[in-house]
Length: 176
Image (cartoon, rainbow, N blue to C red):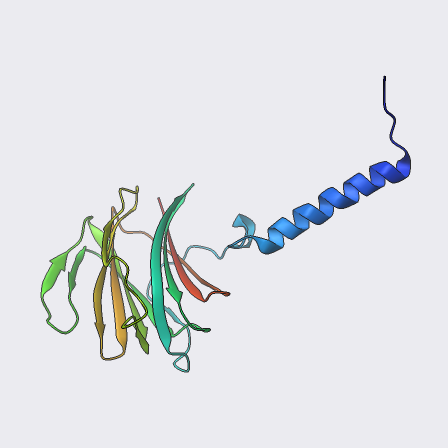
């Protein structure tokens, strides 16, 4: 027994599939690959001094073509931030000035101000990822309104930086 669809049934199926596909794209957690900003080199800044960033979580992820570091905030808005490339994986801890060397041969330093994780962040502060490019992340400090993180990289590279909302997140991608 064969079933034939009428024109209106075919139209309805196409409409439902289109609506569901559009809904999935809108509800997705991140921009589509085509919508992501380009990778750029050098020091980059953004955010706003008018937003106090209460860090609530940090995450890493491995994706096809890049590794990702995400800082999530408990409140709306992104604090001012500066992302500084480094030619080594050597950093200094805020406050004490104690040297620390992360895995890798290069690095990125992220500094956010005004920001703090005191009372809002209880996660790990040193993570060795096993990824191709982003080898280690470590909190360098949460001191006097400044939160800083070091990213240990396998080799020097450019980066892609963008923000997301609901919840507020700062995203740093490094190509691998």
